[in-house]
Image (cartoon, rainbow, N blue to C red):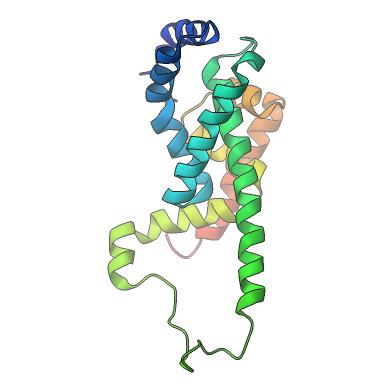
Length: 194
Protein backbone atom coordinates (compact mmCIF):
# COMPACT_ATOMS: atom_id res chain seq x y z
CA UNK A 1 0.00 0.00 0.00
CA UNK A 2 1.52 3.29 -1.00
CA UNK A 3 0.97 6.87 0.10
CA UNK A 4 -0.95 7.46 -3.15
CA UNK A 5 -4.11 5.89 -1.74
CA UNK A 6 -6.49 8.50 -0.34
CA UNK A 7 -8.03 6.66 2.59
CA UNK A 8 -10.64 9.37 3.21
CA UNK A 9 -11.88 8.98 -0.38
CA UNK A 10 -11.79 5.20 -0.01
CA UNK A 11 -13.99 5.43 3.11
CA UNK A 12 -16.45 7.59 1.15
CA UNK A 13 -16.50 5.07 -1.70
CA UNK A 14 -17.13 2.19 0.70
CA UNK A 15 -20.03 4.08 2.25
CA UNK A 16 -21.47 4.86 -1.18
CA UNK A 17 -21.08 1.26 -2.30
CA UNK A 18 -22.77 -0.04 0.85
CA UNK A 19 -25.63 2.29 -0.09
CA UNK A 20 -25.94 0.64 -3.50
CA UNK A 21 -23.72 2.86 -5.69
CA UNK A 22 -22.15 0.45 -8.22
CA UNK A 23 -19.89 3.19 -9.63
CA UNK A 24 -18.26 3.50 -6.19
CA UNK A 25 -17.32 -0.18 -6.33
CA UNK A 26 -15.82 0.32 -9.79
CA UNK A 27 -13.66 3.13 -8.41
CA UNK A 28 -12.57 0.93 -5.48
CA UNK A 29 -11.51 -1.75 -7.95
CA UNK A 30 -9.54 0.81 -10.00
CA UNK A 31 -7.85 2.06 -6.84
CA UNK A 32 -6.85 -1.34 -5.49
CA UNK A 33 -6.58 -3.61 -8.52
CA UNK A 34 -2.83 -3.15 -9.01
CA UNK A 35 -1.85 -3.48 -5.31
CA UNK A 36 -4.02 -6.60 -4.90
CA UNK A 37 -2.61 -8.12 -8.10
CA UNK A 38 0.94 -7.40 -6.92
CA UNK A 39 0.24 -9.11 -3.61
CA UNK A 40 -1.29 -12.10 -5.38
CA UNK A 41 1.56 -12.35 -7.88
CA UNK A 42 4.17 -12.34 -5.13
CA UNK A 43 2.35 -15.08 -3.29
CA UNK A 44 1.47 -17.21 -6.33
CA UNK A 45 4.32 -16.45 -8.81
CA UNK A 46 1.99 -16.77 -11.78
CA UNK A 47 0.33 -13.96 -13.71
CA UNK A 48 -2.61 -16.18 -14.58
CA UNK A 49 -3.14 -17.40 -11.01
CA UNK A 50 -2.64 -13.87 -9.64
CA UNK A 51 -5.22 -12.53 -12.08
CA UNK A 52 -7.68 -15.21 -11.00
CA UNK A 53 -7.03 -14.53 -7.30
CA UNK A 54 -7.43 -10.77 -7.84
CA UNK A 55 -10.73 -11.25 -9.61
CA UNK A 56 -11.98 -13.67 -6.96
CA UNK A 57 -10.92 -11.21 -4.23
CA UNK A 58 -13.06 -8.44 -5.72
CA UNK A 59 -15.99 -10.82 -6.25
CA UNK A 60 -15.77 -11.80 -2.57
CA UNK A 61 -15.54 -8.12 -1.52
CA UNK A 62 -18.55 -7.29 -3.69
CA UNK A 63 -20.61 -10.07 -2.13
CA UNK A 64 -19.51 -9.48 1.45
CA UNK A 65 -19.09 -5.71 1.75
CA UNK A 66 -21.69 -5.73 4.54
CA UNK A 67 -19.21 -7.73 6.66
CA UNK A 68 -16.78 -4.81 6.57
CA UNK A 69 -17.49 -3.02 9.85
CA UNK A 70 -15.02 -0.17 9.44
CA UNK A 71 -13.00 -1.02 12.56
CA UNK A 72 -9.86 -1.05 10.38
CA UNK A 73 -9.11 0.64 7.09
CA UNK A 74 -10.82 -0.82 4.06
CA UNK A 75 -7.38 -1.48 2.53
CA UNK A 76 -6.42 -3.62 5.51
CA UNK A 77 -9.62 -5.65 5.24
CA UNK A 78 -9.14 -5.99 1.48
CA UNK A 79 -5.57 -7.26 1.91
CA UNK A 80 -6.81 -9.80 4.46
CA UNK A 81 -9.38 -11.06 1.95
CA UNK A 82 -6.74 -11.15 -0.81
CA UNK A 83 -4.13 -12.95 1.28
CA UNK A 84 -6.71 -15.57 2.36
CA UNK A 85 -7.71 -16.02 -1.27
CA UNK A 86 -4.03 -16.52 -2.21
CA UNK A 87 -3.46 -19.02 0.59
CA UNK A 88 -6.43 -21.04 -0.64
CA UNK A 89 -5.15 -20.77 -4.21
CA UNK A 90 -1.68 -21.97 -3.14
CA UNK A 91 -3.21 -25.02 -1.48
CA UNK A 92 -5.16 -25.81 -4.65
CA UNK A 93 -2.02 -25.41 -6.76
CA UNK A 94 -0.08 -27.80 -4.52
CA UNK A 95 -2.87 -30.39 -4.73
CA UNK A 96 -3.08 -29.97 -8.51
CA UNK A 97 0.70 -30.33 -8.86
CA UNK A 98 0.68 -33.54 -6.80
CA UNK A 99 -2.19 -34.91 -8.89
CA UNK A 100 -0.33 -34.10 -12.13
CA UNK A 101 2.85 -35.70 -10.84
CA UNK A 102 0.92 -38.87 -10.01
CA UNK A 103 -0.56 -38.88 -13.53
CA UNK A 104 2.87 -38.28 -15.09
CA UNK A 105 4.44 -41.31 -13.44
CA UNK A 106 5.10 -43.77 -16.18
CA UNK A 107 7.98 -45.01 -18.23
CA UNK A 108 9.58 -41.57 -18.62
CA UNK A 109 8.58 -41.23 -22.26
CA UNK A 110 5.85 -39.20 -23.87
CA UNK A 111 3.14 -40.72 -26.06
CA UNK A 112 5.43 -40.65 -29.13
CA UNK A 113 8.05 -42.76 -27.38
CA UNK A 114 10.41 -39.81 -26.87
CA UNK A 115 11.96 -38.42 -23.73
CA UNK A 116 9.91 -35.46 -22.50
CA UNK A 117 11.22 -31.96 -23.08
CA UNK A 118 12.70 -30.24 -20.02
CA UNK A 119 9.94 -27.87 -18.82
CA UNK A 120 12.46 -25.50 -17.20
CA UNK A 121 13.16 -21.99 -18.37
CA UNK A 122 15.39 -21.60 -21.38
CA UNK A 123 18.13 -18.99 -21.62
CA UNK A 124 15.84 -16.44 -23.26
CA UNK A 125 13.22 -16.85 -20.54
CA UNK A 126 15.82 -16.50 -17.80
CA UNK A 127 17.06 -13.27 -19.34
CA UNK A 128 13.53 -11.90 -19.66
CA UNK A 129 12.31 -12.73 -16.19
CA UNK A 130 15.55 -12.37 -14.31
CA UNK A 131 17.08 -15.13 -12.27
CA UNK A 132 16.96 -13.20 -9.02
CA UNK A 133 13.31 -12.21 -9.30
CA UNK A 134 12.41 -15.79 -10.14
CA UNK A 135 14.45 -17.10 -7.22
CA UNK A 136 12.77 -14.68 -4.81
CA UNK A 137 9.33 -15.66 -6.09
CA UNK A 138 10.20 -19.34 -5.75
CA UNK A 139 11.53 -18.77 -2.24
CA UNK A 140 8.30 -17.01 -1.27
CA UNK A 141 6.30 -19.90 -2.73
CA UNK A 142 8.33 -22.44 -0.80
CA UNK A 143 8.04 -20.94 2.67
CA UNK A 144 4.93 -21.39 4.85
CA UNK A 145 1.98 -19.16 3.96
CA UNK A 146 1.95 -17.06 7.14
CA UNK A 147 5.60 -16.10 6.71
CA UNK A 148 5.28 -15.44 2.96
CA UNK A 149 2.18 -13.31 3.49
CA UNK A 150 3.84 -11.20 6.19
CA UNK A 151 6.99 -10.66 4.11
CA UNK A 152 5.02 -9.74 0.97
CA UNK A 153 2.76 -7.35 2.87
CA UNK A 154 5.70 -5.59 4.53
CA UNK A 155 8.50 -5.68 1.98
CA UNK A 156 6.58 -5.58 -1.27
CA UNK A 157 3.25 -3.93 -0.47
CA UNK A 158 4.77 -1.56 2.09
CA UNK A 159 2.08 -2.06 4.72
CA UNK A 160 2.72 -0.95 8.27
CA UNK A 161 3.12 -3.49 11.08
CA UNK A 162 -0.26 -2.33 12.42
CA UNK A 163 -2.03 -2.92 9.10
CA UNK A 164 -0.42 -6.34 8.72
CA UNK A 165 -1.40 -7.21 12.28
CA UNK A 166 -5.03 -6.34 11.55
CA UNK A 167 -5.05 -8.06 8.15
CA UNK A 168 -3.55 -11.28 9.54
CA UNK A 169 -5.54 -11.13 12.79
CA UNK A 170 -2.51 -11.56 15.03
CA UNK A 171 -0.43 -9.44 17.42
CA UNK A 172 2.19 -7.01 16.21
CA UNK A 173 4.86 -9.11 17.92
CA UNK A 174 3.74 -12.14 15.91
CA UNK A 175 3.86 -10.07 12.71
CA UNK A 176 7.40 -8.89 13.43
CA UNK A 177 8.46 -12.43 14.25
CA UNK A 178 6.91 -13.80 11.04
CA UNK A 179 8.58 -11.11 8.96
CA UNK A 180 11.99 -11.74 10.53
CA UNK A 181 11.68 -15.52 10.20
CA UNK A 182 10.23 -15.25 6.70
CA UNK A 183 13.07 -13.01 5.56
CA UNK A 184 15.53 -15.50 7.03
CA UNK A 185 13.88 -18.38 5.17
CA UNK A 186 14.00 -16.45 1.90
CA UNK A 187 17.63 -15.49 2.53
CA UNK A 188 18.52 -19.15 3.18
CA UNK A 189 16.92 -20.19 -0.08
CA UNK A 190 18.76 -17.46 -1.98
CA UNK A 191 22.16 -18.29 -0.50
CA UNK A 192 24.59 -19.04 -3.30
CA UNK A 193 22.61 -17.04 -5.86
CA UNK A 194 23.55 -13.62 -4.53
